[in-house]
Amino acid sequence: MSTTSVWESLSSCALSWLQKREVSLEILNYKKNSDKFWNLLSMMPVRNAAGAVVSFIGVQSDITELIRRKHAERELQQAKVQSFACSPVHPSGPPQNLSTPQTFDPDPLSLDGRFAP
Image (cartoon, rainbow, N blue to C red; front, side, top):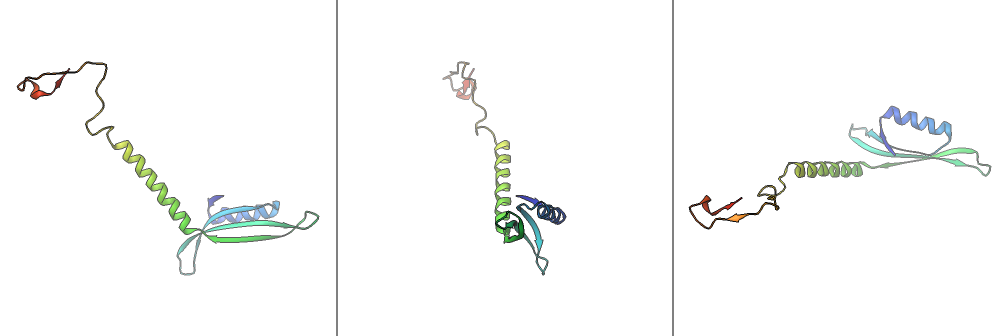
């Protein structure tokens, strides 16, 4: 299944008809009032007992809400990736080098009582 333009959809349907095979397409369509909607068009050949194609069956479904949900999920996923990429590893910064011994100077006037390497 693929999202295609109207002309690509028409040519794909025509090619499927000529090759007598099944096709499913997502098509951006328009209502009489010019509102857009997404349409899933599925066409399947109907064969007789001898295997010859005698007709096609076509089914259309409005999948606008499905497309909106997929788009919203994709945007949310991209926002999460951006948020993760822009956020620091830890609020206090990267972890200290654990192979370097850390000492604490108990003198309150020395380095304000912070750890010193």
